[in-house]
View (cartoon, rainbow, N blue to C red):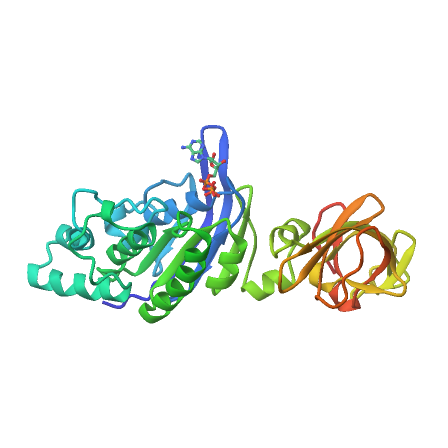
Length: 352
Ligand code: ATP
């Protein structure tokens, strides 16, 4: 069987009555890719995943797996495995029986099943828990059991819907690194839904950013971080997120609150109203620049976040431990010309 695991969505529209959950989305996912669907709650990520699984029909458009049109194929005909946020383990079955279940349904011989279950359980590190029931497992172990059940039959596509959201913060960080390793070693195309931008940035080869039933940007984590396609994406990616403020371009400079600073890309854009975007880590305290007042200092241990006001607007900046201003102090803010992100004030689209 020559399976490569490519995924294509072409202008997919999904309506629920008069509400349009997906407004014509297109995606091209490459074989072996770890691809994240990222966006706020209600933006259409889960709907997209369920459409790929065949659990949801489409109103318009096509779904192709390995260049074959599966738009109307049943879930069982697609050779995909889905892991839900809730894990959906069978409580009355042991871990081994849960993992074996998909193979049993396919009529695989018992001896083959046993080997496959051992192998899948070992891959996710639960080889010694096979005789337990889900109720006797921790959240992290249940999550591994659900993963083992997904990988046991070597599907061509994994669909993961917020698989880490029930784990505590520390376990989530450890598990996402393991998940990444596991996916690399299996080489199976993986589509991963999350609303956590940090998670998407750390696990994914590429990310599609969803907003209100549309895909607003597709790119590597770096591309999305360094060149957000619009102000909404800019504000959604990064911790703390990018500061956005109204500004004017004139003479190759960006003018904010009476201060004019050179900004990369400002040349050739003429005079116009823009939204200026600056990442917290790109703002500096300088001898001259944008006048600001330090309101509050948050010490995170390895770095410091200062909350400052420029006019009546709050901004966050990341500082190192050595140069922390006093709360209440008046300062000037500056930034490197290349650090300035410029967006059209009306449309929010990136300039130039
Ligand atoms: P979350 O992160 O909260 O799961 P999401 O991005 O996965 O959000 P979806 O679950 O895909 O969002 O939902 C997209 C939109 O479609 C939401 O506004 C949701 O309320 C709506 N929706 C989903 N299913 C139905 C349904 N059966 N009937 C009506 N509206 C629905």
